Amino acid sequence: DQQVKQNSPSLSVQEGRISILNCDYTNSMFDYFLWYKKYPAEGPTFLISISSIKDKNEDGRFTVFLNKSAKHLSLHIVPSQPGDSAVYFCAAVPMNRDDKIIFGKGTRLHILP
Amino acid sequence: NAGVTQTPKFRVLKTGQSMTLLCAQDMNHEYMYWYRQDPGMGLRLIHYSVGEGTTAKGEVPDGYNVSRLKKQNFLLGLESAAPSQTSVYFCASSPRLGNSGNTIYFGEGSWLTVV
Image 1 (tube, helix red, strand yellow):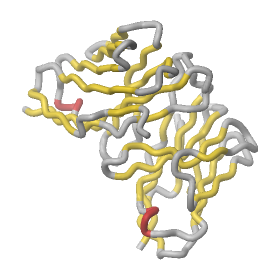
Image 2: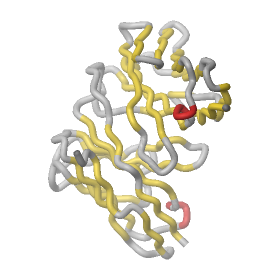
Image 3: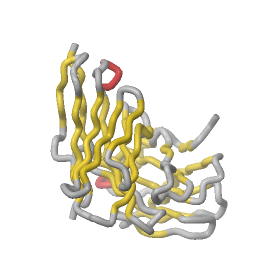
Image 4: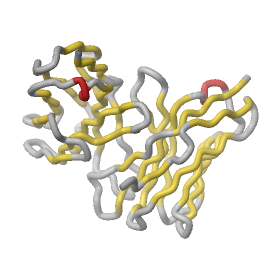
């Protein structure tokens, strides 16, 4: 039973345009969400996070939106750059379980020149 | 600035052989994790530890054992390697997560092939 779902295995976006990566979750007990970025042959690195008490968090070109009623979050990258080509993982942490983080399967983003 | 260090980075094993992957972190984190990444499967948790001397099963624990004798080290063992264990293994560590703003830090990965 997949609690964190990234339904698009891959996404191609023109350089300079907006990239939108989506993530859905099934467990209403998640209260903290994170996005990680992974280049080939490297470990995942933390990108941005959002608490369930917020609906938006912004860090430079990266913005994460949370829609709790829809159990949906999205990562927006504006403008997209070639170095953004990577696999992006959505992750969630359940309330009162500070030892657990559950990852989605990832979305591979290709930035086209 | 070492962070999370995994050894070895690459290994080829024959079916039935045993081996241990070592993970070391220098951030004084309480929690440590072992994940495997396979094509189309994302990151799957094998085992984790919430402190020195503790271990717990994750999503895919079968065929693996772990030990956390020291806070900074988390060992992943394969007693009798199988081709299905061919994968990329990531160790990670974190302080308490929760709604804290904390995050989990990954090592660079260990590529294991079982033939």
